[in-house]
Amino acid sequence: MSMSKHMAEDLATFMDGVERRNPGEPEFHQAVHEVAMDIIPYIADKPIYKELKILERMTEPDRIVSFRVVWQDDNGDIRVNRGYRVQQNNAIGPYKGGIRFHPTVTQSVLKFLAFEQVFKNSLTGLPMGGGKGGADFNPKGKSDLEVMRFCQAFMTELAKHIGPDTDVPAGDIGVGAREVGYMFGQYKRLVNRFEGVLTGKALEFGGSRIRTEATGYGAVYMMQDMLSHHGETIDGKVCVVSGSGNVATYCAEKLIQLGAKVVTLSDSSGFVHDPEGFTQEKLNWVMDLKNKRRGRIEEYTREFGGSYHEGQEPWGVPCDLAFPCATQNEIDGEEARTLIKNGCRGISEGANMPTTPEAIKVIQDHPGLLHAPSKAANAGGVAVSGLEMSQNSLRLQWSREEVDERLRGIIRGIHDQCVEFGTTAEGHVDYFRGANIAGFNKVASAMLAYGVM
Ligand code: NAP
Image 1 (cartoon, rainbow, N blue to C red):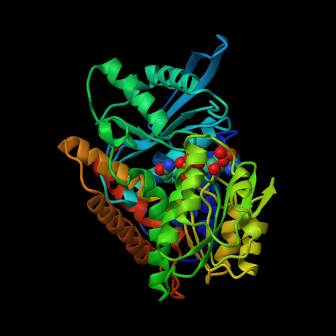
Image 2 (tube, rainbow, N blue to C red; image 1 turned 90 degrees about the horizontal axis):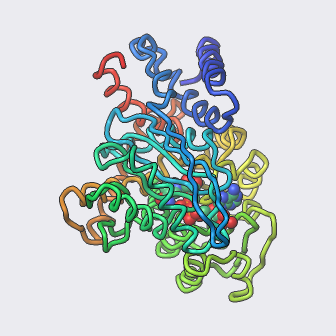
Image 3 (cartoon, rainbow, N blue to C red; image 1 turned 120 degrees about the vertical axis):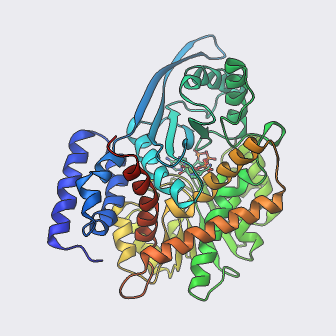
């Protein structure tokens, strides 16, 4: 499906409208453009979607709530942050998507994440709409009690807008088990009901087995499926992973279990290169460093050797497979060229939108490089969140094996949809196009069924 002049004009007109209605929101424009590039040619011969302005409606969030979060730090000083919840689209289920606490959080970032979440959740096959939330709060360097007071203040307002059949948030950058615990406790206290309003909960109070691992594992399962579709396996492959948080560490864990050699991890200050490869023991140490001691990745080299590269990203380290698992726009055009030059065979996006538009273009010009977009590759996290919601409704907890098997099946289903909708005339699979079209179809059909609203 190449883009004709007419379609290119339609895309430009559509994007002009999006940019005019959403000024100063570059991340949101980028996420919409990434989808519209595939959907506008796809609906060119389906006038009903165009006439009923489905894509225009999908880019307008159902609502955005923005609120003041006031809390007191350990010195007794009053702090003021801004919290948000973007409820993007609930055509196929309650809003669902994580909460991010990071100083770089803006409405634009959360709108990009919420928009992408709609397609991702649709791809899982589970009944979940899309949303995202967060605050410009920086958990780094804060005491446990400060984080608790912030989470309680944040939830005091958010609780008015969420519920198990309305909107079910989860974790994201800066929001892990500790923060979910504080927020769930406050919600429960406010509404006086024990209900599955957040996912990513600890096992003791309604969490699902494999939820912590799911996003990282899923990114690896997606790579496994892409390679196997092309007659290859992960075993023996050299892998570069960025980040050292939840997604990165469990991505590395699954790679090691499957016989790959993981040689890097990073944080926002730099990356470590361990040419010997990370082992499970070394990874356990990193998880403890990050989750309990809240330390920096550079400490790794003092314990295990290897080298630390301050202020750099790991994409220059030669690899067979790359797993960006830190944050948005972490691979630019130049870095994509470096990966290709070094013979990289596949990229699976653990983070959301980690490749810039230029990088995507560079990669698309090299169809030999398999590239799974975040909405497909990291859908494992929200998929197991969906399974956590099911378990909460059933008041049951499934075994590790059962959840992992369901996760494996969901990722396989996503891969199949990418192949179905993304196989090009030349016979290679455009995973971006496949994921965009498959994610769009289900939501668009539901919106059509509801009539004009
Ligand atoms: P996390 O546990 O907070 O870890 C984030 C990691 O990325 C940390 O190593 C962090 O380093 C690094 N990082 C964050 N911001 C950065 C920046 N601006 N530049 C460079 N490095 C940065 O978060 P996570 O849950 O693993 O999330 C990572 C990515 O996966 C995000 O894109 C998120 O949206 C996506 N994702 C997560 C889930 C999930 O289930 N958790 C699901 C789907 C997608 P510092 O410690 O230095 O900040």
